[in-house]
Length: 332
Image 1 (cartoon, rainbow, N blue to C red):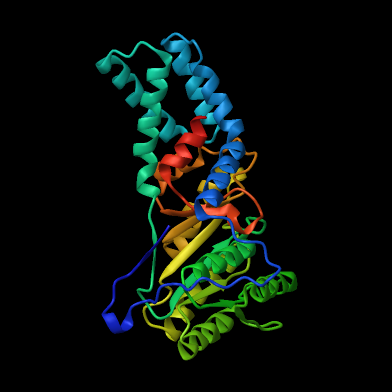
Image 2: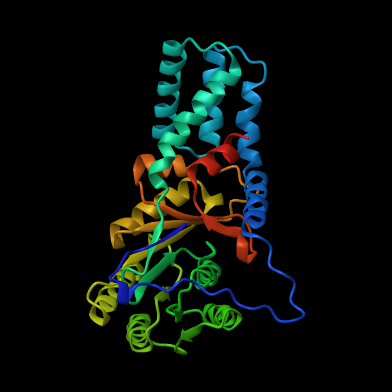
C-alpha cells in the first residue's frame, strides 16, 4: 500500500508507465490474480496459528474451559500476555453484554476485537514527499533484510519511482554481492565500497541520489543483535551522517523482523526503536509459522506501523499489511 504525497503541480510524481514485455516474455498476471494468490499463501503460512484457534470454536460450549484454551492458543501464537489479557477481557464483556451463545458468534466477536487491535498498525508508506525519499533499513542477521530491500526496490519501481541502493553492510562481502545482484536484476544502481565506514557509504548514496534526481534511496545496514551496543551505536552514527547529507533525512527508518521469532521480534522492535526511533516494520517469513500473534504483542507494547509482510522468497511475496486480511488468515 503506497500513497503519494501531494506536491505543487510542477513537483508532482509522474504516474508509472508500464514496461513493454520482450517478445518472448510471458504476460504479467493481473494485480488481482497476484493478490489472491498471495492471500492464499498468507493463509497457508499462518495455518499453524489459525488451526490452533479455529478448532476451539467447533461445537464448543461458551464457558471457562473455552476461555482457558483460547488463552493458551493466543500465548502459543506469541500474542503476549498484555494483548491476550486484553482480548479475553474484552471478549468476555461482549459475550455477556450481547448474550452470545453460539461458538460462531464468539469467534466473530474475537475477529472484530483483533481487527480493532491491529488496525492502528496499518499505515501506507508515503512516496514523493521528499526528493529523494531516504529510507534506512535495519535488522538482525537472518531476518531477510537484503532480500527485502530488493523486493521493495521492485515495488517502488512499479509505482514509477527511480531507486538507488546503498550497500551499507560493509562487514559482510556476501551482503554487498547480494544487494548488487538485486540491483542488476531490477536495473537499479548500487553505491558500494569494498570496505570502510558504512556511514560514508550512506552519505555518498544520499549525495548521489540528490545529484541524479532519484526518487528513493534505500540504505542497507549490517545485521546486528540489539545487545551488541557498539554496533547499535554505529547505526546511530549512520543516521546522523545521513542527516548531514540531507538535513531532513532519513525520512523512514524500517526494521525487518523474522515473523518466526515471536517474542524475540518484539524485543528487537523495542531495542531498535529506542536506538533509532523506527517509523515502520517489515515482517518477513510468515510461512509455516505458529507465531503470527506477535503483531498483537507489538501493538500493545510498541505500536510501530507495519508497512509490509512477507510469506516467501518470490518478488510478489512481500505485500502491504492489511489488518483485515491478516486477521482472517490468523483465525482461519
